[in-house]
Length: 89
Image (cartoon, rainbow, N blue to C red; front, side, top):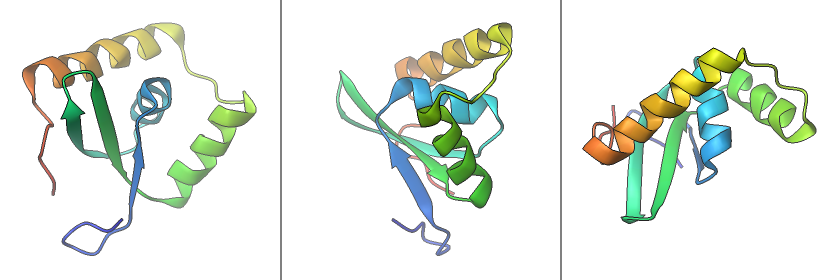
């Protein structure tokens, strides 16, 4: 998927992966919600994002627990108050 500016986008519905990518400073572009119980997180696709995703699935990603918890709360806030829903840059 590409954004209107023709930047590649990586999309995932895996909340833990989305939290990990956001905690590692990958750029969250927007969140789309198919239903109140299902969201898709759209990140700018970069080599860093690709490496972090691979590390996540290989069990090698390291994130300080308090940062992970704070980022998890932040993403949940985005979901509940629609801060990022439907927005794209």
